[in-house]
Image (cartoon, rainbow, N blue to C red; front, side, top):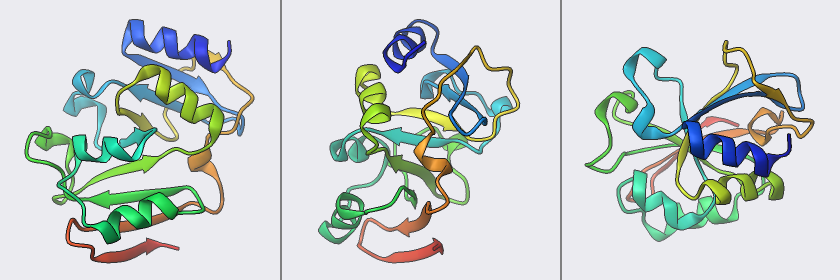
Length: 156
């Protein structure tokens, strides 16, 4: 299966477990299908900068510039917007990543909404794809971004 077929499957079912190119299993789920029993180790995946507004408080220009010009895959921790499910928030923050890798970005674009991913899932994959998932890169960074522009490095 290619990513466009996986996107179609995800749209139908709302959940997807696949083995990516590094051999690790990842799970995708629509936020509305998430339940607390699934755990809190989920990251929102975005394909476009404007999607940040749907999950986080309004960002300052500094915070937006950091996301826009990041050269390496980065997981951001930030303050959720007020309509976010409180169970998805851990210690007052949620995690998100803007996926720039062209193939995975196209996958997310085809789904056309922020979705959740769980890395290192214990689920049985329905399929395997040769393309590595960008958040498994050894150069992945983690940053806290506040709506006011405060930045804290969590993992460099």
